[in-house]
Amino acid sequence: MFYLDSTRDHDGSEIYKVKTNFNLPLKKSRNGEYKVPSGNTVYVCMTSDFFLEEADAWRNEAWEIMKQRPDIKFWLQTKRAERVEKCLPYDWESGYENVSMCFTAENQIRADERLPILMSLPFAEKNVMCAPMIGAVTLEKYLQTGQISRVLVDGENYDGNRILDYEWVKALYNECLIYNVMFDFVGIGNYFRKDGKIYHVCKAYQHVQALKSGLQIPKVNVDIKVQPKCRYCKRNSSCNGCKQCGRCR
Image 1 (cartoon, rainbow, N blue to C red):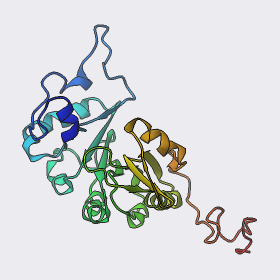
Image 2 (image 1 turned 180 degrees about the vertical axis):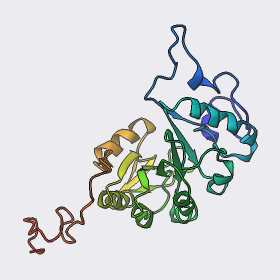
Image 3 (image 1 turned 90 degrees about the horizontal axis):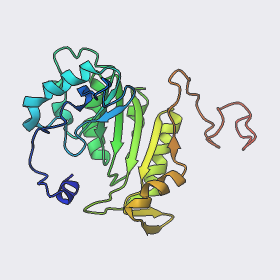
């Protein structure tokens, strides 16, 4: 956030309400159509944090906009897990269907600090963003609740440049595969380690390389029942005499 703001000659520590496009989802063109078409996703406050204490005075206006546009999805993302519940609108109840909540978990300490809070909150869709992923993270105990819709992973590509390890990503991918959860490997970061070798990749190719890894799980039908996998080959369902190893006969 601070890096991106600095490229626009802004001070990242300044908290302010956008003057012109705060209500962009409600604006219409001359022909009467919404400037943000139905079916789109609006990523809210992505260079700040929607649950900043300094923004408390404006948040209810934002909730009202979300209520008025149930035909588009609003993606919220936060590191301030402890503030979310007290900042929900009075009529939240089981949550607005068009609001998707994402908690960040860059390492195991943050995952275990924030995700129990996410599990306790009423959101129609819950997601986890491991970015920048700076250590191995296991989400199994959260994935097995069936509450998490999507897990996203990215490396560090601005100040700091800590290394992202392929094995961390692969392990988390495997967990999501078991529990049938969408997995999105967004980027490998500036420095990526695989098979003991460290690669330095410019930002323009980080997403491309992440896609080439094959560590992607697309959106799946939530009604599909997840079957346990063979503990030896990890491919077919257990006890079906799979041809890969034959050991589960």
